[in-house]
Length: 316
Image 1 (cartoon, one colour):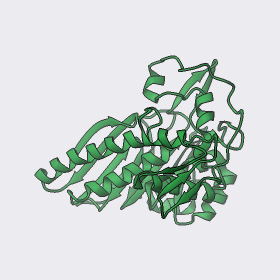
Image 2 (cartoon, one colour; image 1 turned 120 degrees about the vertical axis):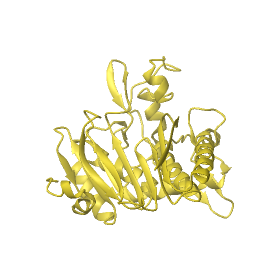
Image 3 (cartoon, one colour; image 1 turned 60 degrees about the vertical axis):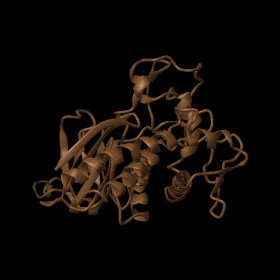
Image 4 (cartoon, one colour; image 1 turned 180 degrees about the vertical axis):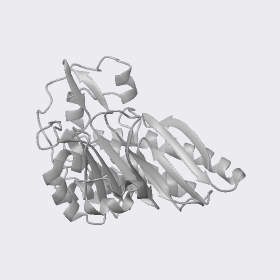
């Protein structure tokens, strides 16, 4: 197995693959370039990004690139499939909570770009977003601004893995915990750790993954202080505030990484009762959650992904 690690999208990126060394070297180079190019398209922290241009066009039709049109289309679909818990229109609420610059800048303690208001002032419904497939155009309602950070990261991980797979016998792209797997390793299967959200060096369970996507949402990693209070990036669209949930992290397994990302976020916000409803609507997906006491919860089909040594672990 050969590896390439670098930083993009304000997170650590890891590429891993097996195959011909010369082909992999070229694959590493081109896949890194692909990820950087897509990051420039979807970031909300650069005025020159296509996402920022879309937000500035709210109230008018916007001719989108195929990539942006696809991700907005997926976002609207997952908004509907999660009963609105996945909602990209919470961008103004993220900014009011203090997340108005990149996480790297927040961790450096840089001051906000402007004075922040009180979080939770309003919530816009993402449902009225219109899509014109013939013209490949997007219409955001006037006043709407969206953040595609998580779902774009999952989509980029999957597209990068599919691109990289043309150079490799098998490969995986890990974009800060959003994984996509193409092909199986020559020996065994891919293994993904379910990390202890309180002590990142500890592993609570190991998952066997043959292909597809895995994504984790947690309230412990992207955190900062705003107006003397701890904040995190998972906004509950029902309240407009950072979510308060009995769960601290959720790992979702699905056919597509963007879908796993949206489901993990929605299930964490929803908590146990809402997650049971979501799991019923998505029976082919699986999830494992960690609560505030470090206990594991999950869907019945999540057991099939546990490594043999983990089969006896109790999932509530």
